[in-house]
Structures are given as structure tokens and as C-alpha cells.
Figure 1: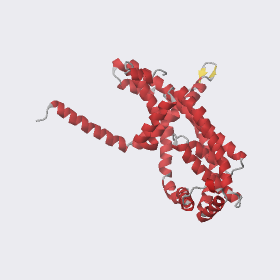
Figure 2: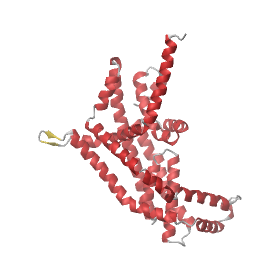
Figure 3: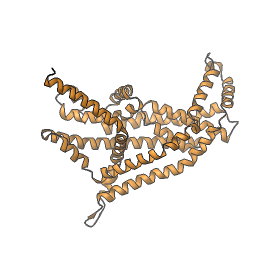
Figure 4: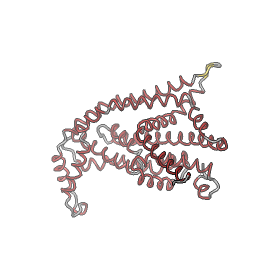
Length: 360
């Protein structure tokens, strides 16, 4: 006969399974809440600025401030989409008409003119053909149109959910604090309040830093490509900036897609242009952006916002990538920062915790 302890273990295990099942089935809601939380973190400084606006004794209500901030965010995003949409449609049309064999022959002809020591003794032709075909297949926008149209309704619902949750997180800034406090034991309430406060400040700095990082990457690549007279420079810069969110591998993916778009745009404008020389010049803004990101932006963001050493962050991202893939790499830094704050409050007696949290 099972003992009371074994029954409790079995019930606890079954409870974990049930909880995991429920969380998996409501994962879209969790994603929406997570995205809304990021929006709220980014919008906090704007809420503070509007909170300082006073007309005599009258101050802007929280609901009005939240509405104005979200309206500003929606306006900026809508403006970007309206500006970029025609460019994306035009680029998709170009990609759908790409002559793979023609591009391959052009590259082969240009490689034939290079010095022998620059070309390896491998089957360059087959390698190039394989790579070009892969790029074209990845970029075949037409094959994805049906799935994109089919997902519009769910996307709109998701956006509405994010905005709705964001509004109340901004309007009732203490609502999450109250919920967490009500679920926390009384003896830990002081520590929990400290964790919540430090988490808000740290993650706000981090997400604003990431937003600034993306903006700088977009500007550097867009301006650099514009100087080189590359078509659709802003679109390529935006793509590179968005992919830069993915640590380490993202910049390579963004550069690959960006160079493909640059090459196809160049072929449309100047069919007889030398592709190899064009790509060698077009890659310069990507290299400059990455040097700036690696040696200036990332140290500033990680050191000033999350207060962690770049090597420490590198190891955390590698581990998160092994466990959760690209999604794990994206959420690695904020998750690690949150864990450090909790460890500082509850396990500060351990030397390893003291070492990892000494700058917090």
C-alpha cells in the first residue's frame, strides 16, 4: 500500500504534467503576454515623461498616458510598414523572376577572371550552384504567400491581444506587483518587492538598449549601402537590424539575405554590372556595422543595462542556444538577468552568487 509521502509525490508529478499540458495549450496567450511585457518595458520612460507634464495641478491620467504612448508606437510602426510595403512587394516580384542559371553563369565567368591562388581546387561550379539554388529557394516569396494570407487573421488577433495587455500593464503599473505580492509568503514579501523593482529597471534598460542597437545597425547599413548606390538600402538595413536580434548567427543570416537582395536589385538596374566586385563593396557596411556592434554597442548594452561581462553573456547564450535553439538565444539575456536578481536576494550567502551579482 502506498504511503502518504508517495501519494503526494505522485499527485505532485501528475500536477506538473497537467500544468505543462495547460501551459502548452495556452502558449499563444503566454507569447502575447511576453510581447506585451516587452512593449511595456520599452514604453516606461515615455510614461514617465508624460507623467511629468502638468497643467497647474492637473496631471495626465494613467489611461490617457498609456493610450498616447501606444498610439505613438502604433503610428511609428504603421508608418514604417506603409513605407516599406511597396518596396517589399517590388523586391518579391524581382525575386520571383530570378534566372538562377543566368546568375550562376555570371558568377562563373567572373570567378574565371580571378587569380588562380584565390580559387580553391574544389568544384567551385557545383558549390556555387548549390548555394545559389538554396538562396533562391529560401527567397521564393511566392511559395509563402498563401500561408501568409492564411495567417493574417491570427496575426491581427495576436496584435490586438498584445496592445490590449500592454495598455493595462501601462495604465495599471502596479497590477503585476500586486498579483505577485498576493502570491508571495509574508516573510519573503520584502525580497520579492525588491526583485520586482530591480527586474523592471534592469529589463527596461536592456530592451531600450536592444532597440537602440537595432536602430544603429539599420542606420549604419542603410546609409552605407546608399552611399554605394545600392537599391532598397533601407529595406536591407531593416532586415539586417531585425536579424541582429538573434545573437551571433543573426548577423550572418541578415547579411546573407541582404546581399542577395542587393545583388538582385543591382541586376535589375544594371544587368551588365560585375557582380563579384559589387558584392565585395556591398559587404563593407555589414562588416562596419558588426564591428561597431561587437566592440561598442554590445559592451555598452550588456555592461550598462544588465551589468554582466560580455564573456559571461557569451557562455549564457551558447548554453541557451543548445537548450532552446534560436528562441533560447533571444531570451537568454533577460532570463539570465532575472535569475541573477533572484539569486542575489535569496542566495547571496554563496560565493559564486556573490561573484555573479556583485555589479547588480
